[in-house]
Image 1: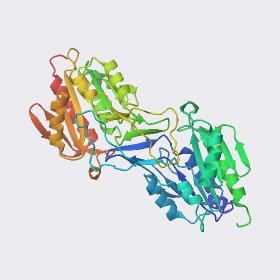
Image 2: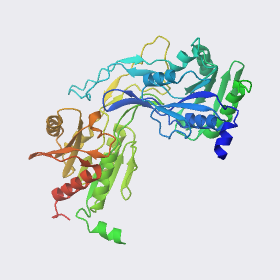
Image 3: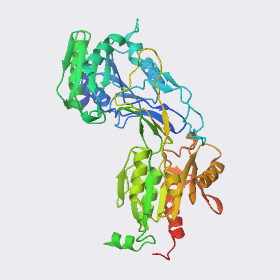
Length: 230
Length: 230
């Protein structure tokens, strides 16, 4: 078919790429959880754009509000720890794009029964534990590290500075940074304004649709992986 | 039109009924929040069933995953405090059905900027405050109390006992209790198995679709409000 031909002719033909997307949910008890406002729209668009260039895509997604793209291998997870497991199971890959908004913390003492008010007005004693750092874990792998590791930084202020710090700290190759201040309407919205930080510096793209951000990012990934190995 | 005629002929014609529905979201910072697994399906079905009996319905909904019913006045809120404000604004009503899964606690020190890991592995210091109790607040009103106040109890164990305690403690007229243990599939699902607790005791209904629960509950409400005042 025409679509099959198009896929098999793409510059990413034969390349296996991992994309994570969406929020994670961290349980407090059987009915309550901690969430974040990620819709999964940008990660979904990136997975679709990589598929369109011929890549074999494994798409590890938290409970997103947008549906996963067609034509990719979908692995659904809820928590950060489940996402790390799914990522490690998907390896080896030639590139890993970590677009998910992973919770930094989980509730260490999540309850098996619904927590109830005890009548004293005292709040629940929630204890937090730091979640595994999926981006740093994969970036710092020795043998088997993906050739290209791309992280995302969602900031509400000093975006470029925090993103450059994050790239150095995590050990990834690129950071795609954006401003998720509520006033921008980016988190949960249809547009994005990103800055790409790599080893050569920072490159800011004008605000555009998340689909267009995805197409440009996929083309940049294809260029980076090069035609040599295809 | 036929529909208008049907509505105007219903047993709840001219009655103003308030229904709350859905979860509330309690912010932690600009991108993170505490949520619960309520889909809003049962509250939405109840509002639709009351409308079908001719009631004028004000529908105060948190960020639910199901769309609000047509033909009702919809007020969208996010937090428990916003929901209480919307409820108080909607009064007076002849009956108030509190089907929303309101968060018991909010984060007292929600941050204006996204919270960041500080590198020490130390968790964020979240402080909790108890949210206003919407059901108790309305149940214990003197002048202006709705003639019928119905609360919901979502429990994961000892459902009937906790629900009867809750009815006494809150001062409402009926409690609609259900078991939201994950194994039941009720929270976020299409069926429900409820027990109605009123001043005469407990009445358990077989497991049935949430639409059917809504129709039976709306009929019971119409019976309770009586035809005398219509």
